Image 1 (cartoon, rainbow, N blue to C red):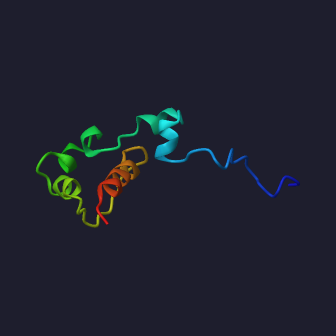
Image 2: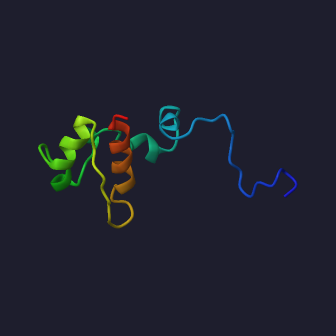
Length: 88
């Protein structure tokens, strides 16, 4: 590894990451990922209007939660939506 010890090409270090990558034409999955509770589809019993978790998220005071389920069901996306809406 004569090129500085990198096993994989990590791309341009100044390239936008995360939410900025979505706005900058990043991968389709990143651009389509919900960014608010209102955009979230599925998990209706968990996020229906008036539910404890939805009220906590919308108030900016989410509580501790553990999400469990198979890959691709939105656990990480929901966690990111919650974190984005949390107030200090």
